[in-house]
Image 1 (cartoon, rainbow, N blue to C red):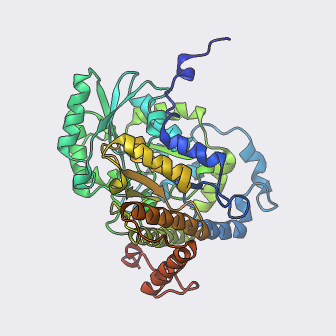
Image 2 (cartoon, rainbow, N blue to C red):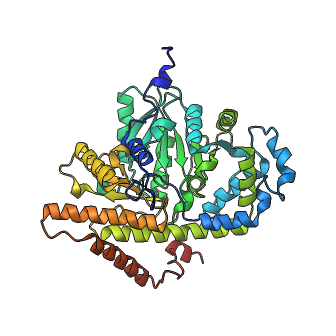
Image 3 (cartoon, rainbow, N blue to C red):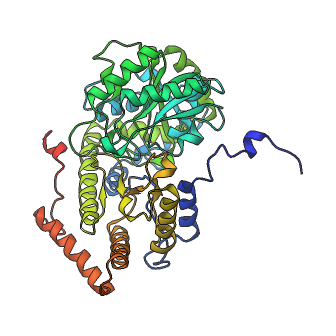
Length: 475
């Protein structure tokens, strides 16, 4: 057998993580309401499918946005021909404008600093390549997205040092935790080149407040290390407090702007992961120049640029979409967390993202990560739900699970909730034996819960959805 590279054959991709094992279980036996009603329901994919009817309406009304239509064919040739790695001016201008709108118009972005990449995955690798040499390190607060181990490390040789955050203070990033991680890296003879924060957080669904962000900027300035702000969930904040971008903070405090970099994409905020639109926005001219050269390895197709530029240049659509998305996420999050609470399952209080950080600590047989994995296997193999265990997010405490709620329709969500309800009834009976409720009564319970939810919000199935407090404050 001919040998291939050590990087290619190593485990740097991180595919042996239970995070990816859950995906494999789903792909082997995916749920379908008719063809596979006992299949695994995908709740491990942070995808925003709640506004596609709204987007579809715009697409139908704007055939010129597609090059494969009578209205758009005149631009087919110029778009299909070579495009340099700067990206179409209209695309960069539209994305920069959208980024400003998502942040409430409180900050403006320069289109000339917009650098394209193949999704946020490519953007993170690009930034890591620009900022650090192999063997150098980034600090990353826990729990953090499992894909970072692949995105930042696999091909760059960069190391990640966890900043341990704890449930006792709702996983806040403290100065003490930052200093401890920094010292740990030094003890391991690792040169720290930067700090990566995810705001809003994946997997927590929380945002960083202004004081915390100011403290983080102070920390990186004192250490003279880079700050990478992953803000790919910026438009998913559906309740107060409002999202605060690192781009706002650097307008308020003294800092070396050459150290500040933002990763963005349209995968989460717009629900377009298939379009692979990733963005690096750096305040450092040298990083912009280097990243732009690197973007040749992961450009956004010119056809996609054309569609996105047309869509995001429509101010009325963008304004309405931002409101609609917040409303839909607020409604789904409220119903989902209410349903879980009624069967005794809690979660971290959150106001953003496409998921919740579910607390199943009381279901563990013992407070160990082995027990967490045992519980996860039951959920995957018996309950048939792909949820992601906290250990795959480098959480320091066993018993937490990320559960995605925006990547399915209402009917699939109800099936998932029924399975959770059944599981909790069985668990409670094992702890305190009592007569097993019949499946029909569980369905009735779910139906009543939905009716109660509708009633509490003065809703019928055809009524307007309850309005997000964040949206109400703006209207």
